[in-house]
Image (cartoon, rainbow, N blue to C red; front, side, top):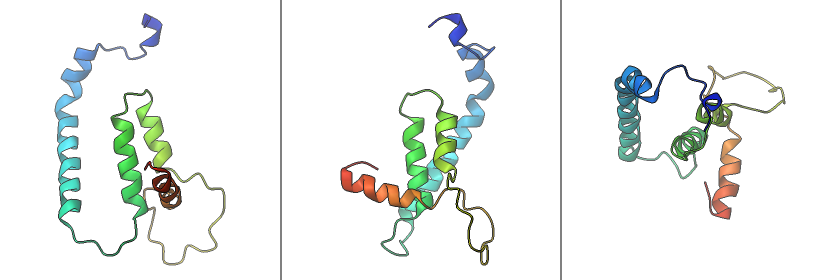
Length: 113
């Protein structure tokens, strides 16, 4: 890679020194969340779209490809242009698009999630 490829003004070691402990704590939080999910009794056989989105995001983090933040944000964003008929009963954002379950089911049938 040429120097023009690197857009961060810090070296890798400077980034590690500055951010490692903060992100170590975040990884431990994620591990604890996943452990809680493993110990929790399922409510039903239905797949929760947030769980599917979270799992897909974890795969992005470890795939070695660039622009992880952009790709994770795209996975967690609702790209639909349809206006909801009503917001009755909604208390806020869900954090992931519900349409991701349909694509996960189709992907699982094809052998990937």
